[in-house]
Length: 296
Picture 1 (spheres, one colour):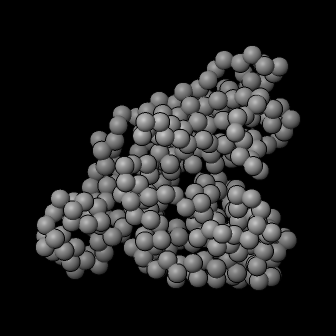
Picture 2 (tube, rainbow, N blue to C red):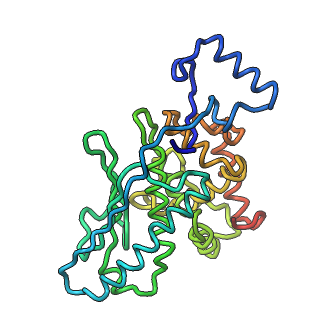
C-alpha cells in the first residue's frame, strides 16, 4: 500500500448509497468547512500501489564517444533517483514509481519531438500498462557541456512522476499547461524563463506571453507544441499552488487519477471555477509583467 490519496467523486465510485454519500459530505463540510482529506470534491483514502517499479539504465554503448557516455551515464544514474526523491517529497507523494522507467543515452534519439533537445520522455501504453522511457541525447551533451544537466533531468523526471502517479483505468488527461508548468516549478527554470521574458516584455500588457490554457494557442506567437507558452504555463501553475496550498499537487493528481478533468477540480482545489481561474491567471500574468507583482 502507498500513502497516495484515492478520492471518489460519486456514490457509485465509493460503493455508498446516495443518501449516505451526501450525509457524509454535508457532515464533513459542517464540521470542517471543507470536504474530507484533500479539497478535491470527494472522499479520500489510500490508493493501492504496485511494488515500486524499477528504473532501468541502458548501459551498453558502441558509438564514437565512449568516455563521454560513461561520464554522462554516471551522472544520470545519480540524478534520476535523486530527482524522483526530491519531486515526490515536494508533491507529497511516495518516493516510488508504479510503472517501469527505462533510461537510454544515445547519439541518435528516436522520434525526437519537434523543438525538443537534450532529453525527453516517451510515454506509451503496452497491453494497457504504462511504459515510460527517458531518452538523453549524448551528442547534445558532447557539444553543449555547459548545459544544466540537473535542471534538464529534474524537468523530465517531473513529467515521469506526474504521468506515473496520474495513470489509472479511469484517469483523465494531463493538460499541457499543468504538465509543463509543473515541470518548470521543480527547479529555478520557470523563474529564470519568466525573468528573461520580463526583459523583453516587461512593463507591457503581456500580450506576447498570454496563452489560452484550453489550448489552441496562436502559433504565430507561440510556435509548434506551445513552447512559447511555457512562461504562461509556469505562472498558471504558480498561481494554482498559491491558491491551493501545499497539498495542491497531490489533490490534483488524485482527481486526475480518478477521472476528474482539471477544469472540474479548480473549484475544490483553488476556490475558483475554471473560467474564473483562467481570468485570475491572466490578471496575475499581467500584474507580473507590469512589475506590480514579483516574479515567482
